[in-house]
Image (cartoon, rainbow, N blue to C red; front, side):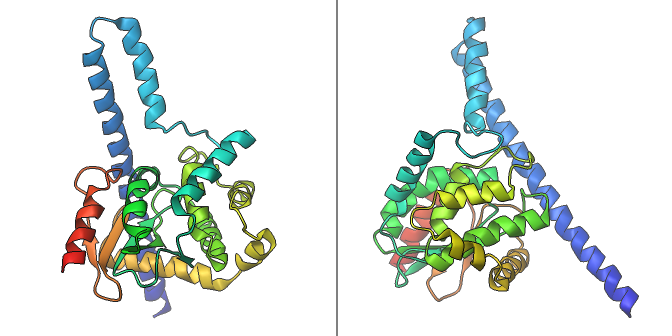
Length: 279
């Protein structure tokens, strides 16, 4: 009996690993396709100007990587202050509770499953949310819950550590400040940039976060259990990559929400919210 349980556990682990690798491969394919498409457009626009093509191609590659440094954390105080100001402008004054951004009485809830190291999640967070949050969250019509799903992060313990750090900030109603800062300063994928120093650096940029309390709260088993539960929910929903979404009337049944082209475009969320508000 013990041997059978052990074998079944190994098979479950293998399935999760295979799903993570599949999601990682699909994500990299999307990134490569986007870069290739951009480079084709560049060559057509600059046809016959060899030097111009080379220069623009380099710029395209830099844009595709979003200007991220390998380590993630900005080197200058000016850059850090600019990030803090941008995030404060976006979510400042909006109610937060734990992993939730938005009014507790909002009629619609969006559940956002992400991995803090996922570059596609970064695209959604930096490009779609700045439109979604002012229109729907700040107006009290939508609340967004952040949930953890391991895809881009290769080491399970690193994944748990970074996600728990975000949830622990939620004890002080600062989880979304931590999440936004992490995505803004996300480093190069697979570079091993997420260290304790990096996590501490993110936390130090969250205005008003009591670092001593946050450090203590990170040791709570509650948040580690939340990360595990989120992963089980994602698995039960059949999610294979991040970002993934569920949406529905707050307190009611949730349905999968898929994006048709790019998660950086907010239309798929806007249309779903509008439909739910009318029903």
